[in-house]
Image 1 (cartoon, rainbow, N blue to C red):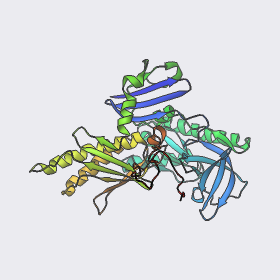
Image 2 (tube, rainbow, N blue to C red; image 1 turned 30 degrees about the vertical axis):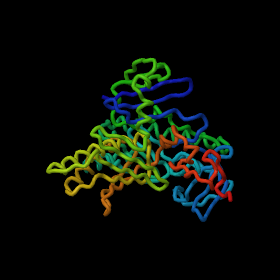
Image 3 (tube, rainbow, N blue to C red; image 1 turned 180 degrees about the vertical axis):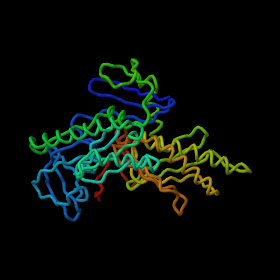
Image 4 (cartoon, helix red, strand yellow; image 1 turned 90 degrees about the vertical axis):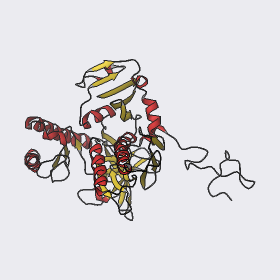
Length: 399
């Protein structure tokens, strides 16, 4: 059973999705003025860095975004002072500017319109060659030749009329964006990103069976049955579940555990058994633990909004059949993630290599701060006569 919780406190909303009472997704409404994925700006080029093959584009007062030349469909290198229509692909993170593109995409429930380049295609999640060919033919009929559509998984079961209606709405939206951008002075927001609740409902593969909120009027008509409750987050212990999910070491029901280490270049996840397992049933017990871990890893990657390169060190398996079964279980669990994921398989060192698109600010960045004592390293300097007390920080270049 899936349950959507929405708690409204003034202008802020907390949104949580539970499946069988397990927390699988959580969002909090962004601060006013923050730069969010999918937002569209009319920006002004502040710097062109040919050595980086990129430009910096002013989005707001003293706020620049990073635009790689590869994200410019025309291939024309901009010049300082140029006005550009750009979209945020990745939000800004500490020490990193927002990642921008000029290859605008407008996302609907059934389709994604990419008006700046041709080449329609069908989501890889749509199986069956006959269905894919039918949908691709339809996509090419619905937009001009210099535009393209990506038909999402839900388009497979939607009627043709519903798809035509949504595409017409996306085309009208693109025309409206162009008209608004023409009358704005950069830097300015042309189109706000959808809020967290809109994005969640749009991208879910399965509609929640129930919605629980303390303020039904604030939600408006979302097309789902809504029940009122005073404190839905407290009622379902959401904050406690978040605390457990954000730990470095996460316990599994079997007694095994996951150790999750986000690094600068990638995230590494280690699967550990609860105890030494010996005997004739050892291989089966290890497989069972790895299968449990695969499901939990998929849930935590989505909940923690972790992206980029991910390496998973499952418990060693001798049988190639067992390894394939674990990969299949991982892919199946990840198929419910609205964010694009790709499982590449086992490396020569026996690690599972996968990627998850960086689509949002990691949950840890939103809810945690680096430890002021250890500066986020997890270690404090060993006290000695030659060192200052730990609470007195010195600059890194101090003698």
